[in-house]
Image (cartoon, rainbow, N blue to C red; front, side, top):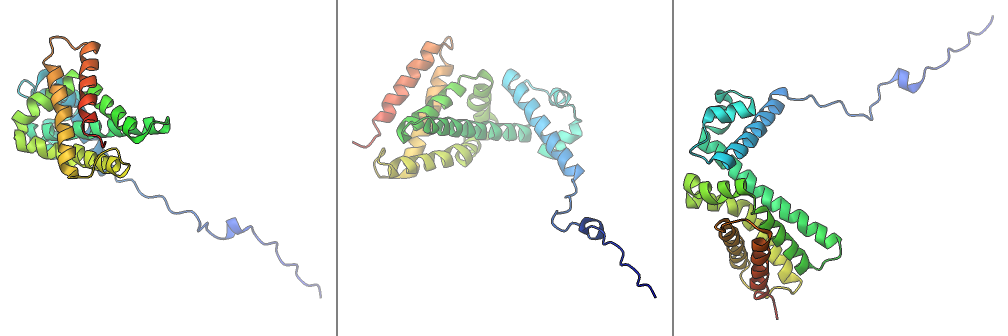
Length: 226
């Protein structure tokens, strides 16, 4: 009697599911849509608030620019002031990210920590020449959000980053020991004051920016450790 030949085994991939690959995570369409709607409204708000100012910017114009309904704006931000607060916060967070990139690039190019710090300062001052950003941050933010409200936004982003920068410079011996937050506040006050001073120049010229940069560098040099 002949023995039956065993059937050839199927490949492991055909027999068993591949347990090494994780199942695809389902995409939450509502969350993705909400995120894109919020981003579109912030972008439209930043453009129109920067060009026209808060008071002159109509709610309908923002929604038309963003391609959404007014109901969407109310749903995500509450009202025009709520959207403005989000725009102002995004603006300040963007400045922090910009200066961090400038500092990292300077360090990567061989700069020492103080030179990298000054490179970040220069990036901040250059960004401060943007007329739309100045209108939002210098003119409207204190009026719309109140001095305290705008200060709280700046402290959530700019102050935290500057505190870390001051600590780093102190650890490296470029700044003397002392109250970190006090020094961070003084530096930020100097920077915002420089931008405000530039805003009152009759013409935004490269010479005015260069002059302001030289003055800021000289004042910061006065804070350095002996």
